[in-house]
Amino acid sequence: MNVLAISGSLRATSSNAALVRAAARLAPSTIVLETYDQLAALPHFSPDLDIPPLPAPVAELRAAVGRCEALMITTPEYAHGMPGSLKNALDWLVSATEPIDKPVLLISASPSGAAHAHAQFSEVLRTMSMRLVDGGAHVFSRAKLDGDGNVVDEALLASIRAGFAQLAAMPNDPRA
Ligand SMILES: Cc1cc2nc3c(=O)[nH]c(=O)nc-3n(C[C@H](O)[C@H](O)[C@H](O)COP(=O)(O)O)c2cc1C
Image (tube, rainbow, N blue to C red; front, side, top):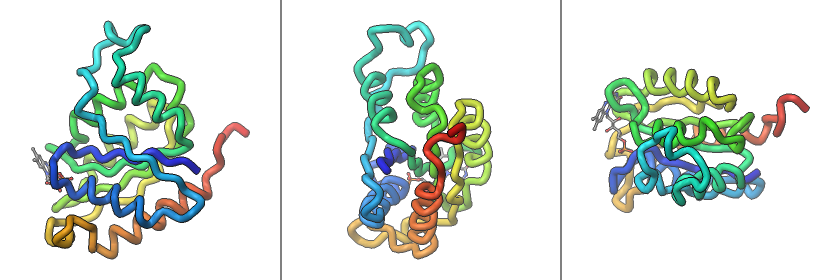
């Protein structure tokens, strides 16, 4: 299974980006993880730009989603919502066919949990005909990263492993 991993944080020493790196290390041999790290290159979504020829970063995002069978999103919560850069990327995928029916494993690293952001994701992804696999939001602080920025929180690492198992167990096409 090809999985596209996206961190919703643009912060240089992001704990959610560290989660993506941890996922790459933990992925079983049945999962090929590709990391998408071009959120900041996407233009602000406008329906006026959502016509051929698409802006190159948008075409690249859609191609990356098209190459994968599932997505993994690690994200902080900002003001009880998802980060704007991540919502912007999802807005660019609304009119695309690539995301349809694809499972999305969602895990958050956040000091006070990210239940509000997860609730928002649930609604947005459902509206976009994607399938949410909620790996959970975890209380997490920079203390749970080691000196090299690696995740050392066992609960988070266990969530990643369990999330991969959930992804692997999902049918590719729920209509099949
Ligand atoms: C502007 C801003 C708003 C935030 N709002 C929330 C929030 O509503 N709920 C929450 O749990 N954490 C909130 N946080 C904390 C972030 O979720 C936390 O810093 C997170 O670990 C950052 O992830 P990162 O290390 O991947 O950048 C906020 C942080 C910032 C900078």
